[in-house]
Amino acid sequence: MLLAQLNDWSSSIGRSFIYILVLVGIMILAYYVTRVLGTKVRGFSGGNLKIIEGVAVGQGSSVFLLKAGKKFILVGVTKDRVTYLTEMDGDDIDIKETPGQGRFDMYLNNFLKGKKNER
Image 1 (tube, rainbow, N blue to C red):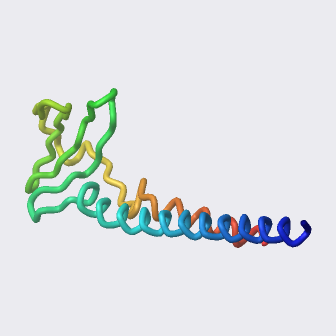
Image 2 (cartoon, rainbow, N blue to C red):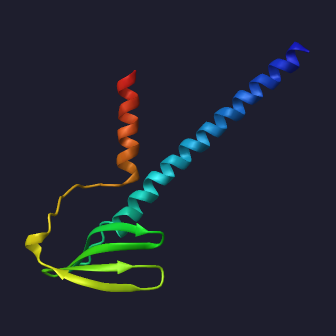
Image 3 (cartoon, one colour):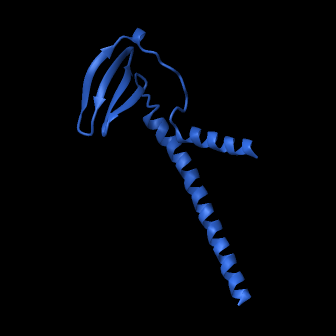
């Protein structure tokens, strides 16, 4: 009886270990996928066209500030259309260069550093 209980206990530890490995694998995969997609979406730069900033203003609608050449253009984006809102003067825009803003890898690294500091 004791041997059967010990066997069940060790198999549950083995399953838990496998679940933890799968979770870590998913987190690593999410890190790399976010890194690849983040550079394609947030840091999109096609030479003369760049997304400077975007803000969600409602469910399924956002406002984006684009830099096209030397012009700054504000557009509204919904799931059905993109609407030109206005052109802005570059002097009115405060561009802060913060690499990795809003990226999953930045949050994960900060979380892991916080855990290391607690030890």
